[in-house]
Amino acid sequence: MYSKDGENYFIVDAHVALWDGRATNQRNVHGKQFIDCFYDYHRNLSPESEVWPYEDFLYQGGERLMRDLFTDGYVDHAIFQPALLSAFYGNGFGQTEEAFALAQEHPDKLTYNHCWDPRFEQAGLDQLRRDAERFGLKGVKLYTAEWQGDSRGYKLDDPWTYKYLEACQELGIRNIHIHKGPTVRPLDRDAFDVADVDKAATDFTELNFVVEHCGLPRLEDFCWIATQEPNVHAGLAVAMPFIHSRPRYFAQIIGELLYWLDEDRIQFSSDYAIWTPKWLIEKFVDFQIPEDMTEYAPLTTDQKRKILGLNAARMYGIEVPAGLGAAEKVGV
Image 1 (cartoon, rainbow, N blue to C red):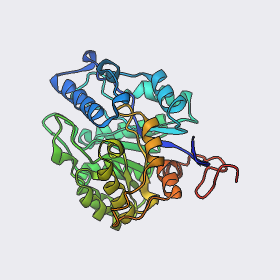
Image 2 (image 1 turned 90 degrees about the vertical axis):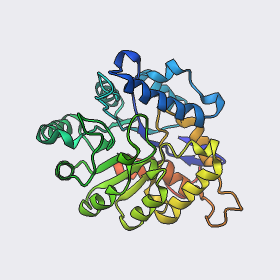
Image 3 (image 1 turned 180 degrees about the vertical axis):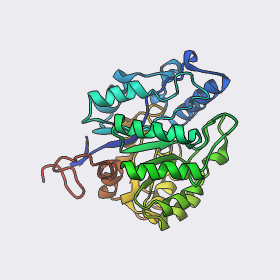
Image 4 (image 1 turned 135 degrees about the vertical axis):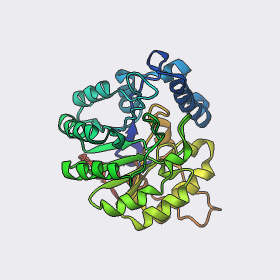
């Protein structure tokens, strides 16, 4: 929980990961390219005081995650959104067993989402059913630009993807998080294009499509889709650190999202461990749209509450303690 100026904020970090980018896990040069690109995002968009040494960035482990998120970072609950990237990493990039074990140890603080790839066709579909039972899945994270054999990406409206989405609907996996944002070297930019969200959201109205990184750099395309598809949501991972490095750009992002979607379909994410939540939360609570950007309305405290945690809590059925909902102040 974060408190400032008599206000309490229940915090859900809706996009975190435990990864292993160390050389011992890199399958090829692309594994190094990927983690180095992550580190460039981290180094270039963070305050100087928040930049980690490169070696620390390669692997954190559960103990540090718990400290960075829950002891130091104000977070009440966090949701794992893993990327497999088995073409680049021998043991995968997101550490399934380590993250799931941590979530089992701390079920009040952590939710484990898993991932699938429709290019594994029937074998992968059978695995999804086993994973849904084992992990108790409420959500999945899709990386549509991931490499698989000779393929360098897939789309949400591919026939096999639809079979997996049908299975998710049947299995009660209602929250489909999709990386639709800035590319990561060596992945292909166009494979993250947001356009395929439109058709899938129309055809699977029982599912929530959380577009991570809110489609950046295709924010306008995303907003036009999301305004007509009420089951499309915006995840703020990668967008959040611009609050420091490019505050007027961040004001434009959050202003457009609030205009097109409203505050009920926007979710805070630190994208840990690219960034830690503490400074992002502090800056967001203090943030206000510049007065000269008159096309956007000022941010309200209730809007900040919803974005920082209440929206994701509602989506995942996370209990919010009394006094931490919208329009409620400390001591009231």
